[in-house]
Each structure stands twice: as structure tokens, then as C-alpha cells.
Image 1 (cartoon, rainbow, N blue to C red):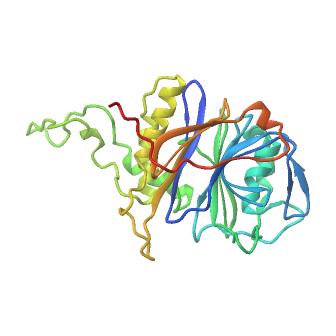
Image 2 (image 1 turned 90 degrees about the vertical axis):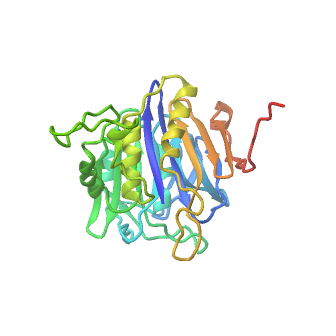
Image 3 (image 1 turned 90 degrees about the horizontal axis):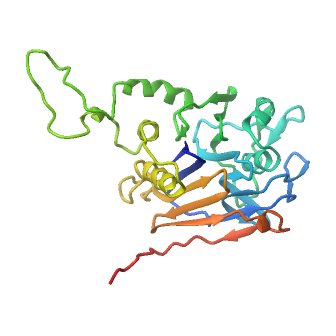
Length: 324
């Protein structure tokens, strides 16, 4: 399970909670310009733009979970079990394996406007990266400084949605989420007068009563509503520290606490890491379940022009500042 958001103050920010019951040897990876990717459709691309994000690396191939390129175009793949449906390769369409969407679009294009026509001809294929990495059932959120869309390929074909919420979780499909959220239209962060009856005076006994009914469970539908409410009502200064602090607080409101969600196999579904990318500056911030300190990695000009990947191991041990 996962939650992805974009957030705009002075700069634009994009990131996610990665919720899983296992780790996938993830690292922060910078792909330089002019880096070669061999695609399963037989073609080869060389990146026009550098990319930064979280990935597992197999050989010299970064398998990104989420990433942003140097122009601010960003993509995250989120788990979409039993709804995602992939087809065979089709030479008449832009056929890409699921793991190829991020390097292809971020490596070659700078905005949603540039890729919209390409996406309408997209065919996500059922070809795995290798025997070691089977096909993952995903849908995707894509954003830039101006727009946000969702891509879902299901059995009845590809669907592309405008996403005015700037939020994506998992199942059910996006069109259900946008209908379900209407059930919460009366929620407000403001002080509310009683509408129960004009015959009794029901005052407030505490702050926040306008948010009674905001779902607090860990299901994807509830996380979608909660993240959207907190994001759209969020008040933040527009400097960098205020913006990233607020971004992580929004993600914290939908994070998975160890032991609160147990899978059918008896494993704990937790927020293994949370990320926030300043897409204007190419800075990747993250924290992990075991380390609350925010770590930042910059996509430097030197790394943008290297011949090989830049790979950063995650700092997993808790970092505490002792005052005495």
C-alpha cells in the first residue's frame, strides 16, 4: 500500500509513503543525462534529462519506485492489485513494460503537456524485467509544476484521469476515489456551529469537531480522503524548510504503524520510507521507518553529467541529537 502527493508552495514538491511488508534493497539513485536504457520493445533510448528517485538497481538498471527529472516532471508507481492489467507487446502502440515508464518519460520529456498524446497511445506490457523481478501490478501518478494526472491500465483498456487532488493511493480505481470523497464534503477545519437542532444548544467541547467523520483507518480509500483533506487544507510558509516539514507531516497523517496492519501471511505492513522531492531544485529528501531524521541528496551538475549511476545507501539507524 502507498500514498503519493504533490504539494506546491514557492517550489513544487512530489513524494510518497512506500508501504510494504518487505524491503526491496531500495536506494536513492541519480541517473545521468545520456544514459542508455534498452527497452523490451527492442528500442534503445538515451536520457535527455537526469533523474533522481528511489530505486533498486539490477546490474546498471535502476528500477524506480518514484522519481523526478531535472525539469520537474515526476512519476510514482503505486500498487494496484487485481485491477492492473497488462497486454502483449503491440508495435502499433507505445509499448512499455511497467518498470520502463519512469525512465522513458522522465528521461525524454519535460512536462505532462509533452507526453499527453504519447500516453493516449500507451500500451503497458506484461513483460517482466527478469525472472528475479516479476511484473508488478501498478498504476501511476504523474505531475509537474502545473498539472497532475493518473494512469490506470485495466482489462477494458487504458484510462487517463486529470487529478485535481494531487493524491493517489491504491485500490479501488481512481474514478471510485473521486466519487467516494464527495461523501466527506461537509468536513471543515473551521469552528462549526451546531446544526443538530434549533431546540437545543450543543456547544463544542474541543477543537477539531468540524473534522468528525474524517476516516482514520489504513485502507486506501480512507488514506485518499485523509491525505487529500490534510493537503488541501494545509497552511505552510513557502520557504524550503517549512515546505518539506509540512510535506512530511501530511505523509505522517497516513503512515502505517508497525503492528496496525497485518497481512494475511502474518507480516506487518509498514511505511518503509517517506520521500519528498523538491522538483524545482532536484533535491530528494527521505526518512525511513527506523530513522526519523530527514536526509537530503542533491542532483548536482557533476552527477547529471556522469557516465554511470550515482547510488546512495539509505541511512537506516535512528539519528538522535543529544543536548547533554
